Image (cartoon, rainbow, N blue to C red; front, top):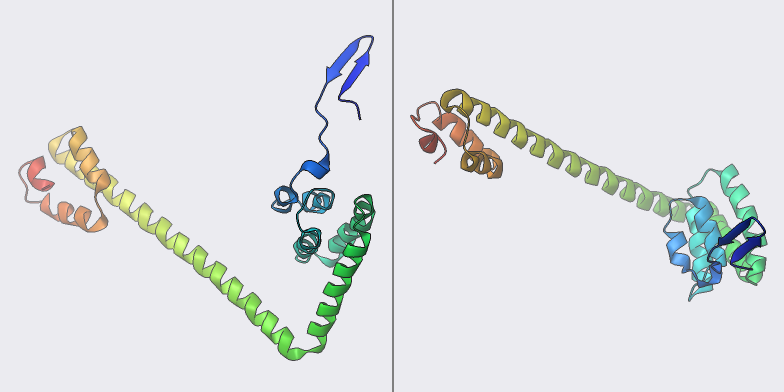
Length: 190
């Protein structure tokens, strides 16, 4: 393919990139289903693993969408001579799915693993929220202490603002109590 267009009133140059030169992992990491499907055309050191990853990335999709996307793979796999490998992987996955469906213990095991992963995600979100709440509470405490000190002592100097910004919750609470009896800003923030 030419890397240019040369017409009487138009000249345009562009770089042509062969998909075989692109690392399949780049597209496999994409959130886009279409990108992951296009990865079948890209370079991979382990073609079978690449196909397996593409198929695995389609499993969370609703059945209708999954079917539509999987139908694109045989056409693209023919372009790279990967039709047999794709067929083997699809059969392997189908056989595994049938074994899981016919074996209650395996199905239960798979459900337990899925539940564990879901619980881990929930725990991670809970911890993130706790950190966010603690940070918000710390910021609110620092803001309130700053207002109280400004009410008593006027505009705060830079050193006081920095000291308040660097303080933890316990220190802010200690200063909030101390400012009630302190006569100077230095005394309140010692």
